Length: 97
Image (cartoon, rainbow, N blue to C red; front, side, top):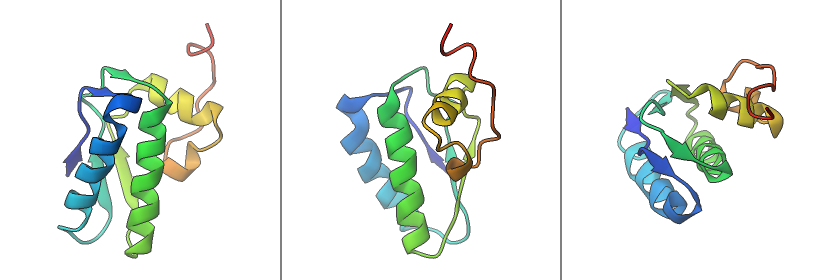
């Protein structure tokens, strides 16, 4: 299982994608990503997950994102990509509050 770092912003995005690529090449079946350590992130984290999804699909694999913070789920929903990442549609309330 690939674990995202505690901080994932634009500054860490390139390294995060490179780390995903390394772990993605090392397995089979659905690519599992643990987002539980995320404490500080921006929309770059969503972009990193979408890139991981794209790469996994190119290899005939899906992705499963586990332990995503509620604000990440809401942010993905706000951008209309929540279902692409396997998140249930969540009401967009706290992120806009």
